[in-house]
Image 1 (tube, rainbow, N blue to C red):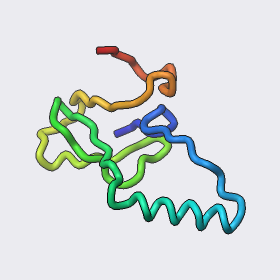
Image 2: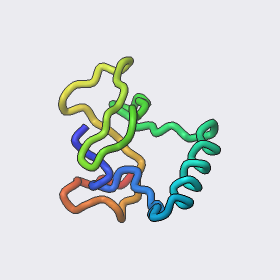
Image 3: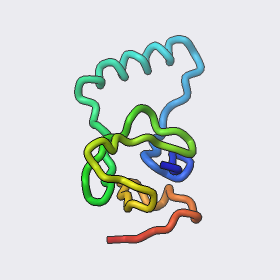
Length: 93
């Protein structure tokens, strides 16, 4: 999909890692949270699809194996409206 964190999708604030200790601390916490990490889900034509890999600046990949997705399919993404840029159409439900 041609949308990514530059558009506000799953934007998470992180701390900068300047020292070796900061990097090791970040890795340690990431490994501790790995078993309980929440899977990112989007909805394509009202059917849940899992986000594959990391979300890039201008793109994201989703698994549409069990969905008959085509160009122009409706995709719902849970995000914070204040982070979305002005070029993205908004529909509030």
